[in-house]
Amino acid sequence: MSGKYVVEDREKLTFSVDRETLVSPELLERERRAIFDRSWIYVGHGSEVAEPGAFKTRSVAGRPVIFTRDKGGQVRCLLNSCRHRGAIVCVAREGNQNSFSCPYHGWTYDGGGGLLTVPGEDAYGPHFAKNAMGLVAPPRLEAYRDFYFLNFDIGARGLADDLAGAKEYIDLVVDQSPSGRLQVISGTQEYDIRANWKLLVENSVDDYHLPSTHSTWLNYMRSAGVITRPGREAGLLLPTRGMGKDLGNGHLTTDNVNFRGRPVAAWISIYGEEAKADIAAIRAELVRRLGEARAARVADTNRNLVVFPNLVVNDGSSVTVRTFFPTAPDHMHVTAWALGPVEETEAQRARRLDAFLTFYGPGGFATPDDVAALELLQQGYRTWREVRWNDLSRGMGKDASDQLNTDEGHVRVFWRRWSELMEGAP
Amino acid sequence: MSDPTRAEIEDLFYREAELLDNWRLEEWMELLTDDAGYYIPPNDKPDADHRTTLFTIADNNARLKERVKRISDPNCHAENPPSRTRRHIANVRIASRSGDTIEAHANFIVHRFRRGEDVRVFVGHYRYKLRREGGALKIAERRAILDAEELGALGAVSFIL
Image 1 (tube, helix red, strand yellow):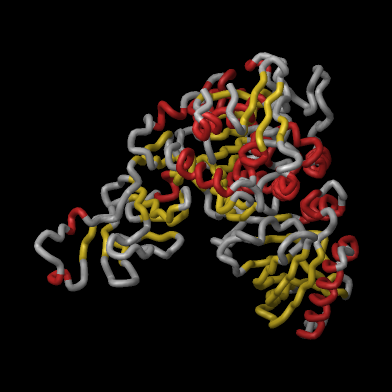
Image 2: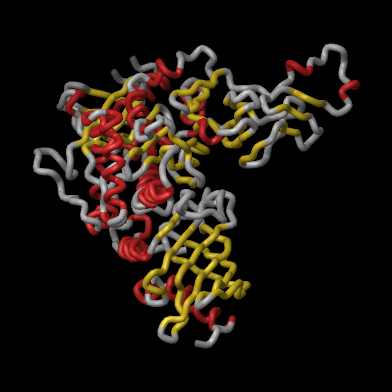
């Protein structure tokens, strides 16, 4: 398969992506229509709106939305724009309230978006139907294991079908919780990267960059007793073997034998001596509940999952949910949260949050270097007319099932789906 | 042990700003107690506790030492070359005293410059816990609380704020 921008040659084993895709305002506009308006886009986690009336406002695929739970307990997503003249009706970041009142002319909507009151309603004609003038919802809102996604394409296939193999990896994350319930933990990391949004998709699953971009993080891990030298098996650049996998429909993941510290359940000295027994108990609970084999997958492997196009769930040094939207071809806005089992003890929760900061986030020991790397890429793309093609051919000589996490088989999955939606490549 | 005056606290803060702006991080560490912590709460939960809320930075002393090691390493790409910063510390006041610990607050404006990038302006306030050790006034905890609603264009906080 080949398009104009994504060119694959299976004989010469090359896979090239045109750098114009990373700089062009016209292509970004097409992405908004062909990708963001047709794919399942992550909105939020049900735990963020745990109580009836609870809401969060955020921007999803460029639209201001209210993510809320109505009085009946139903999670809803409403476009945050008054039906009268269009102002945002809810300006608060979060809260709990039964109605949203437009600051401009005072039209007031109930928690489910229904239009309640219109000041001076008698001035409207007899055909003015309040019951048809509620806040507009995106055509589709569906959830998988409390992860809520919207779709602006009313004809899109259902979320569960679309997620395909990604479901199994979401399940592995959720299995950390004895009751199967995770929650988004208080505290939001929102930061911009001056780079094309697709570069963060690549970066989130590209383990090839780990030894060079994150050598200072590896030093930090080594000081905590982690073995960081590459494993002996041929081809390994990292201490353990990891795979890159195609999960269908543009979704992809790494699936790695763990070598780092993990609150579930790999102790490192950073967690403190007193955590050792507790982490052993967490693992024992996993084995009792899931059996040895499944427990080992949950605890002793880690994964960075991409749900096409822009949701990343990193289940590594902790669990982070990260979503990002382009604001310009060379600029994106990132929002990230920490996820944890609802039944964690205070000490376990504190350890999870501390472990998060060993790697992730704008003050972590690794993410700032990813940000720096992505911004260097974007600066380099000012040469795109002269230096036209990105090379993503690592591992192409091997079967799809043999792609390492340091190969690029899984990154190609993203670009093939991109090409399918953007240029109709088969 | 005499109670510190505001002037003595201001001198400590100005000295700290000078050392940080000049990337004299080893000397800066000498201003801290052996158990000093460094915290930046998330922009949406400025008053939260790092044990229950995801922070931007929550370093105990061991990690703070690792952080200094990391950002001094040329392989720390986010800070190579090191950011140029200029700190302005103002509105210094003593907030409370309890036992041997003094809580002092100050406002800050930190401009951060990197080649080829727009200037980034970090505005907020510090909450310090100070303690006297062997006669010297030292920093037992520093908490930098940003006023921005989100990090946004400030990007990553890879230098010591």
